[in-house]
Amino acid sequence: MNNPNYSEETAIARSIAGHEDGYRYLLEKYKTYAFTIAIGIAKNEENAEEIVQDAFIRVFKNIAKFKKGGKFSTWLYRIVYNTSLTRLKGRRSIDTRSLNEPENYELDIPDNYANGFDNLVSSDKIAFVNKAIENLSEYENLVVTLYYANECSIIEIAQITGWNTSTIKTRLYRARQNLYVELSRLLGNETKDIR
Amino acid sequence: MKKLNFNNQCSEDDEKLVKLLKTSIGQAPSEQFTERTLEKFMVFKTKQKNVHKPLKSPLYMMLIIGLILLIPVFLTLTSQIPFPDSRFRLENISFQLDAWYILSTILLLLVLMGVVWAELSVPKFFKTQ
Image (cartoon, rainbow over all chains, first blue to last red; front, side, top):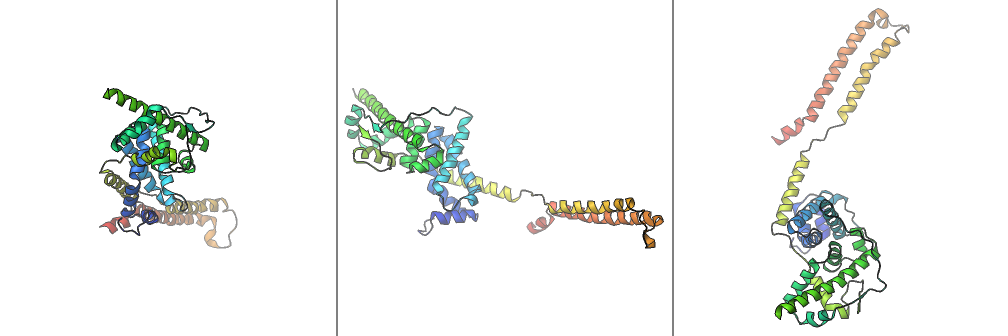
């Protein structure tokens, strides 16, 4: 795996041929991204790990069917997303509210966020952002994870989730807006604690 | 007010938070995750290798034998046709039917043995020894 010539294409070809090093490469490369998607939906580490494990096994079972022109990450994330939903269906209802598309995607930033967030030390900023993301809904969490952490485009998110592009943009906009609100609330609590 | 862009790049006014989102999101599964997943998949692969897949060819052979067995019945029905050869006269027909059924039974037994051989994976058994 440390071989610089060992690319993702090589790993896929080796996996199709049934070689363990191919599976290992794909697992190591994508486990964190896949786990981040699953935990955003499952909200529980143990369940998320089971979901990701099931998703990877499904991927390896069907790897010969993977289309060469496609993007492996998009295919994997779609399977992780579907596996997460299948697990979720048994326990909770899925948010199917219709979304009104905002006229302009302008984010309203609370005052105390603008004044307070930049003054935090780097580690606190990360802790605050992670806490705020945890408090988003499953779909807001998912769209933020796919868009920012996994660097998927709007089109790729559409392929993974099956949502149309305007729904994705609206969810992303709402997620960002809620993130500001959540960060502002967390900053407010922090200030209260100091007082 | 900041306008959200959809090209997944850090815009100047929103750069700090977007950079944080890109770097801070990400949770890793447990350390044993890779090994556990590989182990589970390898167990599945081994099981799949040993899964018994029934052969179709013995079924087709059985059908052919069945049709061969039915031929004497048709012959009996059409036995009123005068055969020039003495062997096909009516008084000899029961002997011919007996001979036919003995031959068919032997054929059927041979096919059954073939089925048992293939289905029980006898060649595989010897290979693994």
